[in-house]
Amino acid sequence: MQIHKTREEWLLAAVEAVRPFFTEKRHDLPMDCQVSCGFASTGTRSHHIGQCWSKESSTVDRNQIFISPALYEPVEVLDTLVHELVHAVDNCEHKHGKEFKKIALSVGLEGPMRSAGAGKALKEQLVKIADALGTYPHGQLKVH
Image (tube, rainbow, N blue to C red; front, side, top):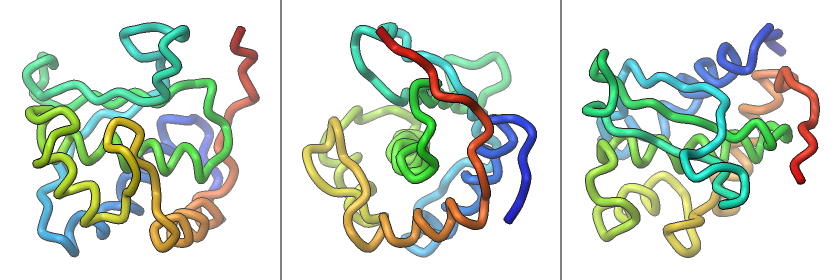
């Protein structure tokens, strides 16, 4: 088990841990995604738990991914991260349309695409990754 001092360290390690899911399906997951904790641009009332911004929104030409600090359970964080990484593969071009759906289904997400989450097989893999990554370093946030 690894020990990460910050959520960002944990999230960057998580990106590398799930990268093979994308590579195996021949999806080009950007090597330099920026991943951090933060609320979606719509705030906490929207209940969005993740958000990906296109490369064009960054001065350093990188996708910016934010995972809600309200999430603290490692498998849920990983599940949300995989969903946002699908957006990064697509550079946020097709929102939750058919191109997004094709990528999402291929890596193991299922359900309505706006809230697509890990199917059974992917969830089993995320549990193993969470165990290997160790504790997600942050306390539970009270969201009102």
